[in-house]
Length: 245
Ligand code: 4H3
Image (cartoon, rainbow, N blue to C red; front, side):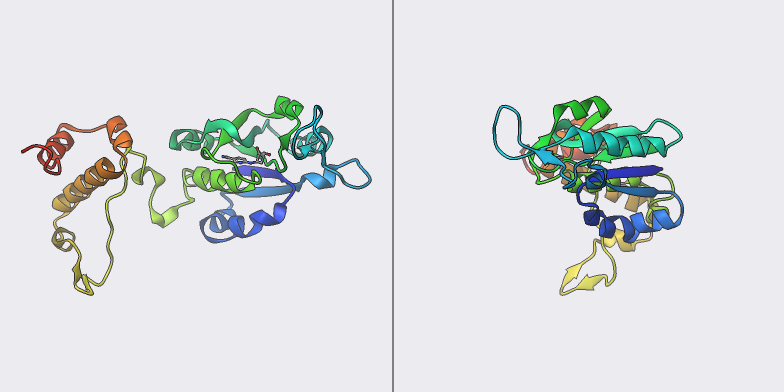
């Protein structure tokens, strides 16, 4: 997958994209990133990218011209038609389902705003507005990085030996069970016996049950939506935290 990023602050991305799992995915040729500095496309002699809002109001608004020209440059370089996303608190909230769907795209373009916002006419160039949550940030750069990381996990080969994103939190609608590593006892705290037993079926059962308990306790909203088996329901009913006498 190719991901082009349009931003006024390309330097914000270098660490995040080049370290750890995303860095390795680039080396493996699974992911390619392009950083475009919107300022480089300003036709203004002072390389201006923002201006005062018509009708007054606080702050500055990103101008059409540099963003349109930057997007044109990205499109001129691409064979197909990229999917253009604008990161914004007014977009739909990113979900694991949407992230998985986006992981099938060949080419994403992420547009990051700064200042108070963008000239609304730029939205004619955007296919989708996405938000990473109900809070406002100083720019769309951090949300773009979150989106990239979240989508990349669903691309085959990116997680490699770490396992598949499918196995992890949210995918079967439940939170993860607790995990332990050596030593088996640390400062008097013991690892649950079953994990040391080597009994595969019992271990799988324990993990599922722990997922059910932790999800009910912390995110009952997720539990209500999860696909539960008869055995899951029976287990939860038998371990209702003493609500039933
Ligand atoms: C996205 C962008 C929060 C999110 C953002 C989010 C600054 C967009 C400015 C930038 C606009 C304010 N904040 N929740 N902020 O995903 O350019 O709207």
